[in-house]
Image 1 (cartoon, rainbow, N blue to C red):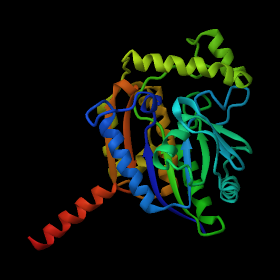
Image 2: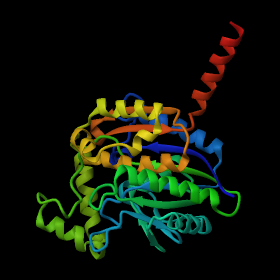
Image 3: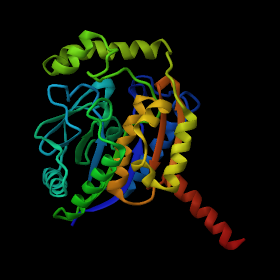
Image 4: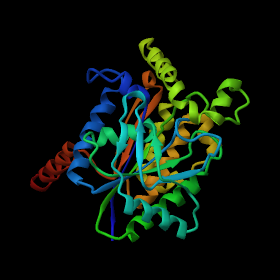
Length: 327
């Protein structure tokens, strides 16, 4: 029987790669340092596989067929946007199929892909935590940026079903679950239902699958120009910090978030916290370590909510405990 051994939820941003923090006190520096320490802790945990819940940004899923959930079970390929991995990534086929079959048996009906492309929504956090790209990954796309949007409760329940499916899978794999997305930000719309988008962009969102490779360079260039122009985005740091505090006290709050409230105060990009809801429910335990930095230069509030703590954080806790026992 496989085992879920932990959960890491963290933000992603194109600018984390294309405008990285060069110095510790540069925008994103504190967040990047926290993730690097968390990477060491994940390596110490030594998972046999990871399940990554993340969104797509109109690179692999289009309105020719837009599922709320999609599980890759045979082949996963990074499209390589914003400096993320390009090409085929390792996928544990038997575990992936066991997850798909397990959630279906529990009353969920996700789409299945035998050849799933992923963009930075999944590939960035995977590569930051496992830069050797050697830990097999089950990719699970949670639609977070455009209708049909599953509710936060539905995502939480779906994640719970994924966790039970993992634990029912054959073998003894130790599985780490990861939620990728959020926190507060206001990205451009990728909803074909949005009446304010340009007609040509709406056409791409519906019919863009054959044109994705052709259009991608211009999308990348626009992001690079924004980074070079030192453009900033809106971030609601108060909401982000309050949510992290609530998660630390009760992870189940992720299944009780109200979609309209979240979008109103934290922007449509915060809808990606659905991925945190799914990963957290798959884990089923506490999230004991958080980190946060508002990074307007990356257009996102960059946060972490994890069941495991960085190695240096653990060492500090042990040292404090020893001092307390001898004082």
